[in-house]
Image (cartoon, rainbow, N blue to C red; front, side):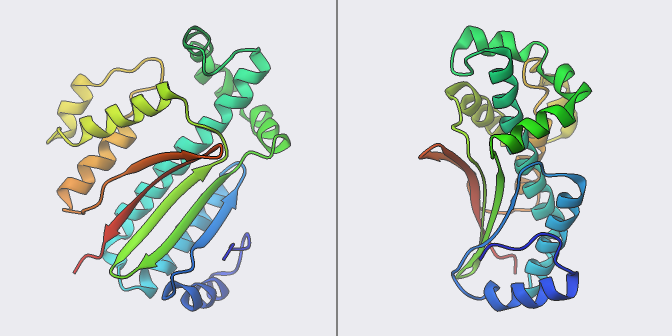
Length: 219
């Protein structure tokens, strides 16, 4: 079921209650993941977790979903930025050249690059599903992840599974090309601290990248 945009909270909860107990996925799609979309996603997650009696995981699930959706938005922005600069994102030298000014250029002119994403019909999709005694979460975007991007994500997830304190991560993590990557590291540290099972997986099928996890219910 694809959720409509900006559904009032009371109608949203009624709609989610109808589907949360089934195996049918609940989906929400946005092209720019604006502030309004972010608030709406929080409402969706809050209602969904309430219905399946897993409100205790709300803080973690909200952080998890926001982090992955922001990363997917960044990946989409990279594509239109590299296209505009005439660079091949799959070429190692072009990738390094493009990322030198990516953050500065896109932050200073973000509306332009968001408009380009809409023109190219790029999107970010959240998919939720209750499956037996677990929550299945996937965040998708319709661009193919590069090997460099995948390696960096996997590396940060592995680092997050090793650190015991945020101070350790802050002292060690330096990735000037992609940013510090603390979001993914914190995500893994939260999973360990809260004893939340589940392994984050990354896959690409037919040009669509999906990052997700199956999380057992907390009892």
